[in-house]
Length: 279
Image (cartoon, rainbow, N blue to C red; front, side, top):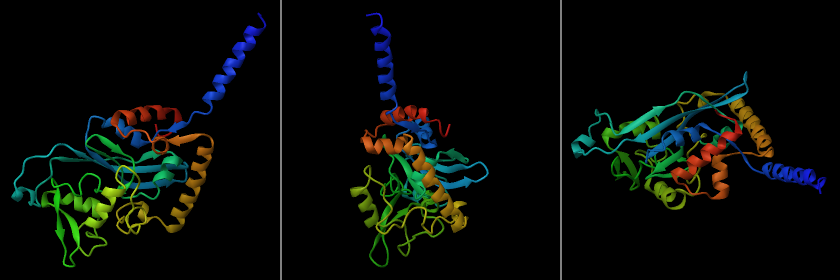
């Protein structure tokens, strides 16, 4: 009986170790940190503003722009149309270069210039979408729908929120529609069929890294050879990490269909620390 006791405990330990080895190892990203930092905010958007790879250190980087809703003021139509006014209810936070893991870089390599995380009325959405369609396009607080000369409906921001036109549409304002902002057809497609469900790149893949609107990012000025080599390299590196059991909170949340509440995602973010990346 005395001999069985050590053997019994050894079996239990081996069983626990084998079970633990099957648990996913989460790769923490700056996006997880943003969720935690702004957990008390009900509405915000995170745009992937730029990305890069440093060959000397074999490191991947992101830059983000975070738009935070600070509360809508009561304004007259004249005040809304004032192009010289500064929108005090939208706070824009621009991050420095932040190191990301190969898995995170690989997941977002096609999302430059897009919203990669949004929170609307307290509900988080980790799917990617054209910048602004998540919280601002279609929101009468910021603009209205107009009709262009060909009869198409497009979104136009009030003069007070002209910064959004520059931020979301880029220097080629009205890209793809002659003039004006995002088309109502695209917005309706996103709102009905993609919001909180899956990423949206436009009916004909107009949005994302390959879009000609991404002219202000440093990534867009890199050579095709450089970008192709980085994309090939990061795909292999991310695949190796995944084969070792690593995953991001974004991919895990999709596979497990977890609730998109602030508390659920904050829990996911805290668990991701075991991955050891992006700290």
